[in-house]
Length: 209
Image 1 (tube, rainbow, N blue to C red):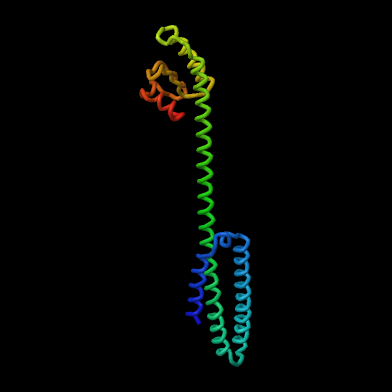
Image 2: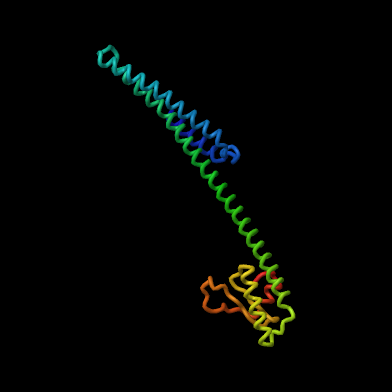
């Protein structure tokens, strides 16, 4: 009997792992099964408690055949607990697998959505910065950057453009030659960051630097 119960339990556990996700992740079905198991355990516990109480009363009254009844009740308890424990282990394995599937699906979905939001935000910021850079380039177009007055005017316009756009760093290039740059004092940078000569070309080709 015990071997048959263990074999059936092993078969049910293996079948439970192969159940489709739509069935295993059905919370209503799983909780209904859980409550059904609890009710069955309570019913069996009530029957056992009643038989034990009746046996205790008969033993106190020294009724005939109490020893035989004690053996019967002990056998009944053993036979009753075996399927209950098997059912409990199966339900525990099924619920554990369901919880793992819930969280694995949720985490993967959250990660995908988070990556999509981050990528969309990155693209929006890049497009916004590109528009601001194009506007500043139009404002600085035609300035004589070889003359001190032109560089002074460009410096003022860069500073004003940085404040309007809220950028932390704005640099001006004349083709591949670095001309001037302004940095937001809130960044705490004491010196300008080093910029390569290929930065403008990379920004034009890729739309970002």
